[in-house]
Structure formats: C-alpha cells, structure tokens
Length: 272
Image (cartoon, rainbow, N blue to C red; front, top):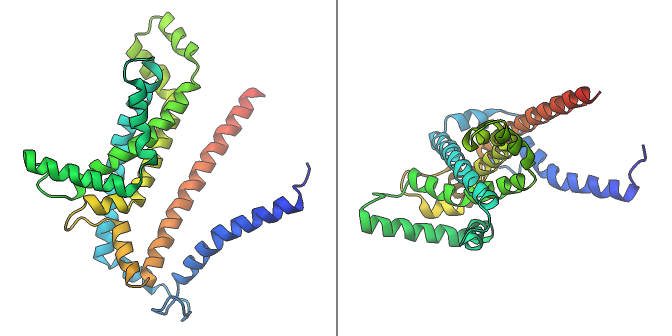
C-alpha cells in the first residue's frame, strides 16, 4: 500500500488541526474553575453543575429539541412527497416552476426567508386571527418550510439512481402500485429519508436567524439564548453546554460508523 505524499499528508494534518484544535480548547476550558474563560484557574466541574441548574438554558434546549424533532419529521414527509413528484410524475405542466420553488430555499438568504415568514404570519393573524401569537408553533412551521427543501433534494437524488426494474418485477408479480411502494420503494429510499431527517433536525437545531424572526415572548430556542449570552461575554457554562453537545454528536457518529461497519462486514461475508 502506497503512502500518501508528504505534502498531502501535511495539508490534511493542518486541516484537521485547524478544525479540531479550537474544539479541544473549548472542551478543556469547560473544566476551567475561573469565571474568566481566558484565564485558567484550575480543573473543576462546577460549570456543569451550574449548567444543569440554569432553567433558562434547560428550557431552551428542550424547546429546541422538540421543535427540531417535529419539524424534521414533517419536513421528511413533505420532502419525500416532493422528491417523488419531481422524479416519478414525468414532464407535467408546471414541473420546472415546482422544481425552482423547491430549490429556492436552498439559495435564499436566511434573513429574507425569516422576514417573509414573519410578514406571512402577521398577514394570517390579521386575516383569520391565527396564529394568535408567535412562538413554538410558528418556529416549527418556519423550519418545516425551508428544511423540507433539503430532504426533497436528497430523495430526488436517491430516486434518480433507483433501479426501476425492481418495482416493475413486483408489479408483474401482482403487486398494486401503493403496495409496491410500501414493500419495495420505501425500504430502498429509507436510508435517504433517514439522512434527510437528520439533516433537517440539525438545521432546525442550529437555526438562529429564522427563529429570531418567527419567535415570540417566552419561546427562545437554544441558539437564541446562547447568542444573547455571547453578546454579553461568553461564560464557562456555555463551554460546558457546547462540550455536552459535542459529546452527543460524537456518540452519534460512533454509533453510525459502527452500524455501517457491521453492514459492510455482513455484505463482504455474503459475497464470499
């Protein structure tokens, strides 16, 4: 096995160092006993204790996870339907317009998206009296609106490389179209749907701009709370919160990698 050139190896090391050294520093300073994050005051876990006693952060985190889970679920459903429509309904009238409308949120600045959704909710409130106030519901609807576009693109890419002969064979054996979709198509595109759900969940959990436009009093998400604290100066409990999030992400990546390793190993054994 040939070794990579020294220049490429050095560039790779520099890239990983540039990415991960700040993360490692953040983790290290989450155990800093000093209230000033720039001065090391000794090892301590006091900020983790204070973090779990901070009701504002806990409530914001629970709200963010709730909104992210609901919006990712509905975005996956609507995005899957949109991806199927783009790949299976042929050249129907308005297909080009529909494709452009699906792709628009991907390139639209978040400020424009947030402002347009704010005006939309205000107009609805004046016309039909709903929503009565902006809060978790309006944030969830806003996140569904723009994150379903990402799911649609993923599903569309997966459907374009799907072997149609599998579905045709199932129909030749007497399967109805809906039953074929449930038994053949859905299991094949389920990894893409899971990827779309995870992407939509991450986008919703990370969103700050759109949530700021569509939120109301008492509905601050975790990014909004963190941003408000950062403007006044980063406190060590924010480092502790970031460390816990990194830990959760690392565990998720490790579990996913282990599952993929087991699947690849099983496929290799079947080929042998």
